[in-house]
Image (cartoon, rainbow, N blue to C red; front, side, top):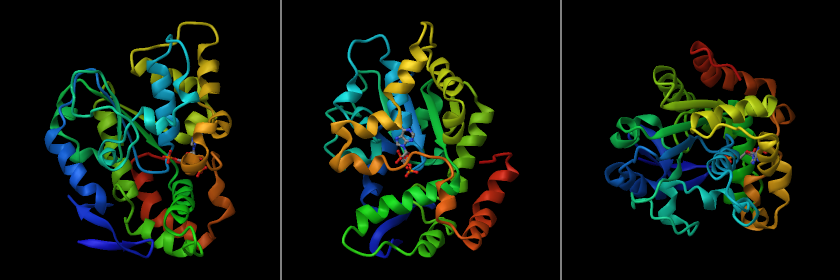
Length: 286
Ligand code: A3P
């Protein structure tokens, strides 16, 4: 079924038990049936608004470290790391996702359960980023107000909380999406690296080093970590000309705990009951 989302008709469609942007269902099906992962592919995975752009910048910079120049100065991170199911709809980059001849750094918002078998069965690595559900929701509320309601009043936040708590989130129910990747990362730590936005914020050097080691590119030189963190920092990327205008929506505040400025205690309770408790039962706290 198709559904109204953000009070826009037919924006989301249910596919394989989770909600996805209607326009992405066909590309997602193509991805699942046609994509053949290579052992040296790296797949970044996330729900929207959990820090995808930051993870793209960090991973790309880690894999290219040692090379001259900084592609981030002239490319938005989304142009460097294509989101597979969105690619047919965007003119982001020239990379042919179905050309298996080059080693690839790619991204998807799809849940683990629907990833192509070749991703699961090959040695291809997966890096997942999770974020506090409340900050994700607030970030998403701003993002979709910019996209869907530019010339109108913002969607009442209460409605956004309703959508979020009922699992109507592009990519699937928040807790299901996080839980699938979390449990799989516990089962196969060499295959999936599970990151939290909040931990990258609080312990950036430690977390960036984990990513670099996981990707087989550990830091060896003095000052490398600091330099890379600066290159990918919110403050720097937001100011770059390439990230202004159309891409500005990916850089808002970049902080932890902004939800406290918006959510009432009733909204907070609803999110805790529907999403938070499920994650806490798995030992996941944000
Ligand atoms: P806020 O809306 O809370 O500011 P995504 O990339 O998955 O769409 O997530 C976007 C969120 O990540 C936004 O959060 C955005 O500001 C934040 N973000 C983008 N780049 C970042 C960076 N380099 N460092 C930290 N946060 C970043």
